[in-house]
Length: 230
Image (cartoon, rainbow, N blue to C red; front, side):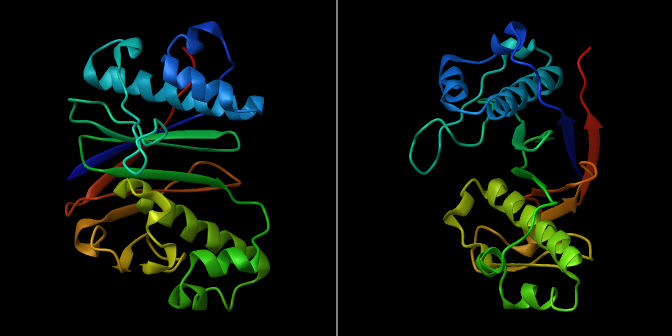
């Protein structure tokens, strides 16, 4: 059994004690965001990840080092890793939800999305294959939107778990219908197989959809927690 812990938080203020936990490279990424809320989401993700990782590793948050080197281009905007530690994590944020998923080393991907916005047909065509789109035909507009974001968060979680992101074609992944438990049915990419993939839908709160994926042949036990300031 693989344990996967997901922590949720609201955007933190840009207070000195939180900004002090950013590395110089992370400070550059923080400053590059134009919108204050985007800066706060990035900051919160790093503070939350360092705080929980520090607890799991038995060190202070400021001692936790991340390597966020992108496997594709070498720039520091990839999924953060903790060098030398049996700990895998994935950060995601949308609206007022910032989440971090942790496992004891099994590759993990987390995605959360605001689900109240309208979904254009072009986005459905881009993300879902013929089999998946068929499951949407009999749904009302509201149900269709909710089902799409269930598909979307599941697929994004899978892509994040592989570390390859959108370099994997979304339509090459076939998932179980939105009304069923999250499951990878088939994949055109060898990096993803149903036998070595486990998934779960999450409960980030009203107005949001979220999912987590873990690349393992074992069953997973997912727990969700809310992180608040002491």
